[in-house]
Image 1: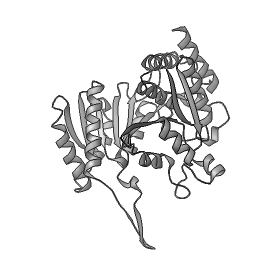
Image 2: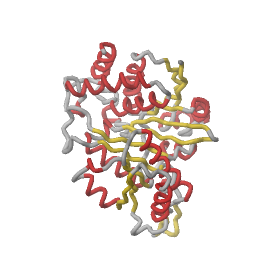
Image 3: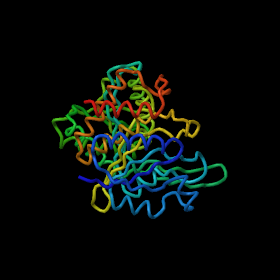
Image 4: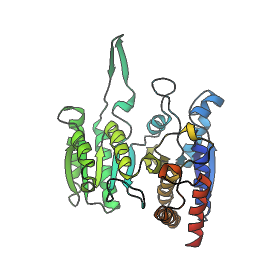
Length: 339
């Protein structure tokens, strides 16, 4: 089957790691017609806008996107392309697994948890008002529909992936209305899934517990801001953002849409040096292959990736090795062909 997928190569190291991932996928025999378009900084320089209409039209047509890192200016400049895409296509669920890889030294070797992050509300709705020169009001948006559907998604994910527990993460002792509603919706949704254990935990306690005993957690569902912060913390538990991955799923005009992306930055300081680590984007692509029912190819790549990590001979500098991006990529392809 030939798949049509929108490709956003991003900027910084984005094009390099994207080319690596494309080569690896091609080695499995899966046929993908990559519909490449610009977004972010490069799009702005060429078109004067960060999300040109032709990019949005491509996503609307293909419904599946593989996206490399795109630079987001801090405190000024254009709004986050990631946030804009999630809001435009109502990609309400951000899925961030954290699981140990072989041969990567971390404080814990038994981490296997998944964060389900609400992706469209909270302060990411971008509702800010300047009251006067000394006062800004930032709105923490929460709706019953938004809270309910992300909690329901978390339970469905748990069942589909044979997980045993879903824990809800809030600060409902302080945010009694917004987080209180999130917690209330979770409790109501949980009644539909009696086979799944539930747990309630405050976000500050969760952060402490994660750095003491992360193996106690399975699936965690939480509002947007907590999910953004806690998912990076969990990435640190298993080796850092360079190997972290994610998917953003939802519905646009009643059709399923999904964007798969690495979660690290564009790292312009190492762009063009052939030392970037494509693991995060590759693991995102593995999830993409599963999503489009190319499960055999996904398994081949995952197996090869784990073998390369286990041997530890050809890892990129951020992982303590000396391999180039090209050497790391070719080693994975060799493993795929020999298996």
